[in-house]
Image (cartoon, rainbow, N blue to C red):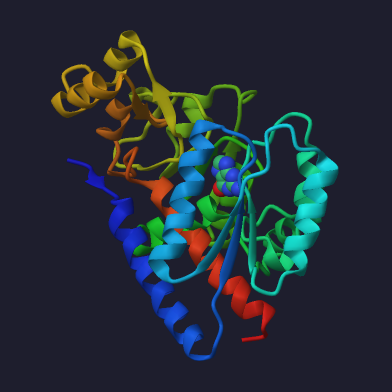
Length: 304
Ligand code: GUN
């Protein structure tokens, strides 16, 4: 039986450490603060941002939820970011993505003070990551490294194959794995003979955004499987493809009319030696690392 890499317990351990750090800062009169900017009404984004604000409350951080209307202009968003950059009670500025099409997302993310860029999306932080002197590292990639390290899965010398090349996950996680001395291959939608490459992976990271894209035949027996995908299934056909015969999933699907699958076909998990489940894996680390980054930003900004 493959080992389940339980995101909940790893995230809880990190949050515990963050809460301790928050306690120490409180004794010095410092309360780390996060501004969470949620534009419009994207259902998934609303759920994520609510979880982020709740995590702040749980760990003793200050948070300010700002909710501009869906038709907000780039100029108004730039003014908002300038205001947040200047506020002393705000250590982290998080702009939930995706943004509506009229917003120039790249310009906006570049306007965030790199010292408050707790998502690690600013080109200055991306450059520091590449140069091996990271300050604020993107949360999901940082969380993946925490899962591997805290589960005692060796990285150095291993072949890590990352499927997906996004700025948020694929590229930064590849760089982090490289800094941990893995041999790294990055694959993407134009990669030829993908299965031949993924079958060489000791560590396979799937961050493509396509339900169950990694099938059992693409996995080397015993590999560690890291599933970054969060895909909602709503049709019976889709459900049966991945979860037929799974009584627990069946009950949840009947109740809600949907369920979540990652980028790795759950049947492929059974080929691996260890895997992160969906839900309950990588996603929980993203929030824990955001909290860690916010505390880190608060300390760095004060020279602590
Ligand atoms: N949308 C999906 N993932 C993320 C994330 O990590 N940060 C932000 N800001 N938006 C996202």
